[in-house]
Figure: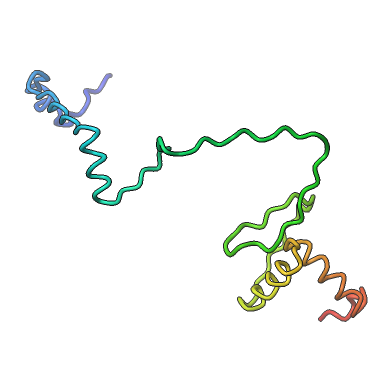
Length: 138
C-alpha cells in the first residue's frame, strides 16, 4: 500500500539543467605594481600597520639578577586601566553620580592606590568614625 510521492514541481527545471552552460569566473584583475601602490598610499595619507623597514629593532630585556620589587604606580592617566594583582576576587557594583566617581578616582590617583585599596581604606575610616554597628540601618 505504498503511496506515490507528491510532485513538488522541481523536475521540469532539473530536466533542462546543463552544467556546461555555466560560464567560468572572470580572470582576476592584474595587481598594480608595489611602487605605484606605495605612491598612492603616500599621496592619500594612508598609514600601514605593518612594521616598516625604518623601525628600530627592540633590544632584548636585560637578564634579572635577583628579586625585583614592583614600583609603586603613580596616578593613572586618563582612560588608563587600573589593573593590579591584589588577591581580591569579589566584585562590588554600585551606582553613583559622575562627580562622586570622579572624586573617588581622584583620591585613588592622588594617593597612588588602586580602586579596591581606596575602598578598603574608606571603609576603615568610616568604621573608625561611626563604629562597626550596622543595627541602625533602615
